[in-house]
Image (tube, rainbow, N blue to C red):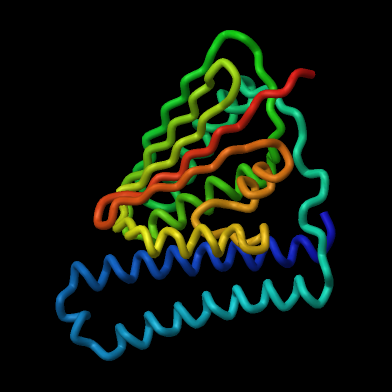
Length: 222
């Protein structure tokens, strides 16, 4: 991987953790009424928001100035059962240890071997991104269901965060799909998968209750 890509991926990871910091600080304020009256709380929130905005600006400026192509041939044909049974459980267990969020993982497989185009590196970032966004939304639990159907894999992620109204959700979806590189509430992996390999994506949110991301990944014959 080039230094250019490493720099942009690092910037994205920094942005993820700024989102987590914002989420935790919001929870801290909610649980401490005295902080709600403090001028320092507002300054901290503004500082974290500014750092997040600067991170977005840096990424956009760097991409524009270097004309980077971030959509190289990173997707490979992978045996679905083998990959998810071997990697998913330990990955989500590790995320629970790191981020103090309960992740309810359910994996439903079929007997017939199937293959799909996946990006292994981006799958790691996808998990991190969805967990960090859930925490930033005040979630304490995340339901993850990886379900194999006869012709496609369904990945569903539902958090119990503050949710969004339809207007807020529409803005985030438009932002994510605007340039094909933004991360919105999902990941570049989903956006690229949709454009290259026929992924189908849906988003839904209930204000004050939850947000759900659902992705359909078609199988391919070897």
